[in-house]
Image (cartoon, rainbow over all chains, first blue to last red):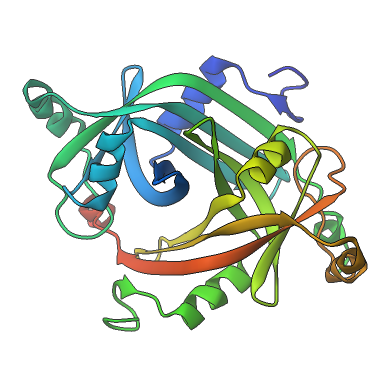
Length: 143
Length: 143
């Protein structure tokens, strides 16, 4: 972090990976006909990439047409009034079939909806994170 | 909801607005040079639109170059193992100056970072939401 360890500021890449490894739910953004959309996904960190499950539906079709994606995880620590957000920008690709068995062992299951047999890997080009001291003075008002 | 009130399925538009009104933190996706990115924002619902604060920096510049945005809020109820996600797709525009005073009264403050004096409204073209029964069987394992 560029400022203090408990305050706000940019996270180092290593701190970003720590956040990514400790979360399991985020949001994937991709582009359809030039317009952005977002879907929630659960994921695992696999080495230097993220892996999630999907069906062969609209989401996958659009990602494969334009591999560029963004992915975000965040958390708000109400007690300390600290918010943390990590954004990964990169490319999404089908996981090679010969790697699927290994990911099965990681225990990645799709939380959301029906079976999602297809594994997709996000290869990061850029990882940025920030920690914010939340400016919510009303949370400190006496009740 | 199309299925049961406690199960999974698509949310009605009214249910989506209920979720949006009860949350105050989400993620904005927009497109830079054809690639998606995401930023966390806090927001308020103002009638049939969402309003957030920003600076006059990169985010605003890019949104104004291409007004199309997507916005997502979600929540996970661990007790009931239910996840809810609402996605708004629409256009973002600077709020007219003569409406700023009214929004001040709503009490919208930027939680994140320094002063963000510029108000931006997201006018939804499409609002969709889903409630998911989370498929996390390991959460029910005996400990």
